[in-house]
Length: 207
Image 1 (cartoon, one colour):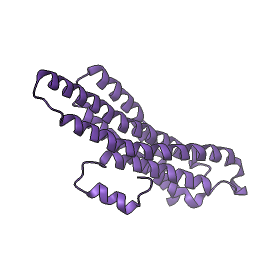
Image 2: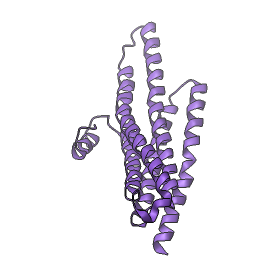
Image 3: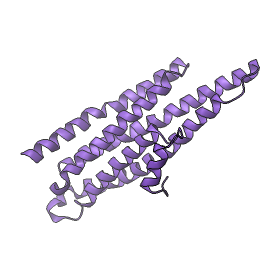
């Protein structure tokens, strides 16, 4: 998907194919949030007026670039993971052995399908934290972009959570469900910070 145009990718998303779907869209949202954080940094770095924030901006920029790449990679992996679940459901089930193998493949596929959006949720949470780090020292001309970055990452986080949940309900291993749910709840804590960033920016804009 790194080599396709936005229009081509959206056409694939809109098609009757099961993937890419909501999970991949969540990954792209996280990548957009990270890209906006990078933009804020790039438009602040090198400006004498913001020299005291230079070190933080450069540090955040490097991390935002890393997260953008990771988010796009996860968007691609999400489509692959979902396709694996679909393939598992199509396995033969004529004998007891085939049924057992099919069930095992489905369960393994569901865990993987939940793990990918969980990773997206973690990336989105990190993007929100980066948005918070650049809020005070950013070039005021791109202040609204800090909020949009947090908003995009929050949307990615919420979307990824839905994709984790839809797989969790079918996972039979209670310990695995608990592990995934616990990790998701930890990532979801970042929603509060995203909302605080958006509120702070709106307040400063209207002041």
